[in-house]
Picture 1: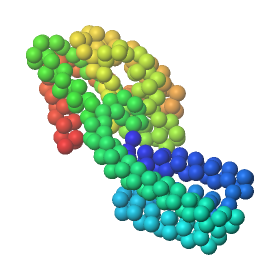
Picture 2: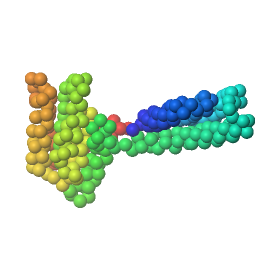
Picture 3: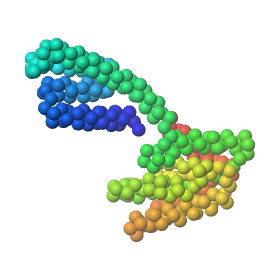
Picture 4: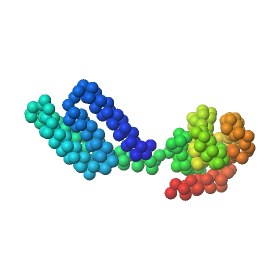
Length: 265
């Protein structure tokens, strides 16, 4: 999740909470200035989250000044002592919200930026992304060089035009295949990843023969799924299966890793 999305979600939740509380105050026939002061909290929150310390300071001063002026002009049934207490309370509330939200902006923005650089999950399919695939391939290659442990790589390549066409029809092929088939029919030690329109499976300690059995089983299930959406299209042009065993297919795996590393720079 990117910080901007988190920010919008946070503001939405706070806005709903404040709106519900304001509606309750209206039902209870609360003083109009207090409802106004209550809503001003949302202004402080939004300004502080979006513009940091400067937004926090400006919104705090503006909202506190507006509330204070409104409270003193329309004092209503309150005594001046009670009005002063309300003004002090709003001073504390606005100040705390401004400080807290500006702090959240600084800390969480850093956290999400750091998280994005270390993110290994593809948002659409919920399996590993290209960064994850590159990391896992490098780890398996090092493992093979040190301990002579083989691994295999299964690559299901889908036609880009078909994937795009299905997406425009509201059908997310890559997500359906990843969650509905690959995740449910592979071992817990197998690593799944997506690279553009390719879905890949790393099979630790598995040779070509075992990878071929696994690949053909998954291919049959994928083709059954695709047949529902092909509309008399050619299956062979939509799906391609490739199986690599390391170190026998070292050149192909190394080429894939080099390509991934170059596009991640």
